[in-house]
Image 1 (cartoon, rainbow, N blue to C red):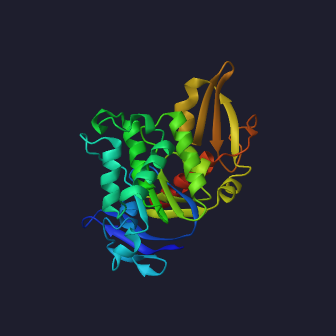
Image 2 (image 1 turned 180 degrees about the horizontal axis):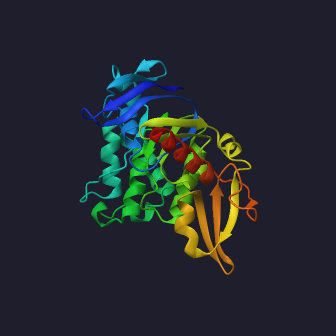
Image 3 (image 1 turned 90 degrees about the horizontal axis):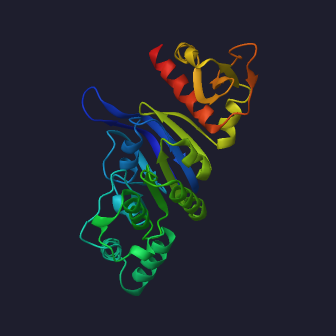
Length: 294
């Protein structure tokens, strides 16, 4: 299984590009697609899900151009868009049965699959409640269930943990890790911890361009020895932010503890600390932005 993105660009009008010359090759496992809001993640997800076509370039699934032969991919695709809607008068069983039928599943196999997925997303006890009475997090879990109905070979989830409480987010991360072995999973998110918990590879996108594609270990290595803890008075924070990349702040009795990402220590009394993926991600985004403004 292989999804190949070749020099894909998407233009919305003469001045606005959602993607520019984006290339990436993705195999089995979980790819965490990280980027700030507005970076182009959803545009890319919609192209990969055959909802829209690229302006330039192409995407192939196992060597087949998905723009020319979309049904080749659609039969093996599970997709949870960022803005997932439901039919409020249907209950969970009715809704999933309807979508299963659209995907060519029916009868006893469909019912068994639906029962299994409702247990997985922790909604079995409310299967008969109309979806209009579900919370935002419950609707998101129904979205996850529908994306898995046809046991897809390619699973695309766009900001899937929006609206989920911490326990539900952990459950969803574990689910992605469990199902990723023999399929391609793309997790698009701006939350580094979501990608960190499940992804075997990471791609960082900014302003519609691929910034880096690497394993979590390689990203961490890129900032090894470049993260510092520095204690300052709280009153100095705004001034310090003008000169340094700050990846975290913690208030303590002796002052404000900063995490600073920089090649050199910001002050003599600062000390090196182990890097996190949040540090590496923020450095990637900051470096890319600086390059664009030079």
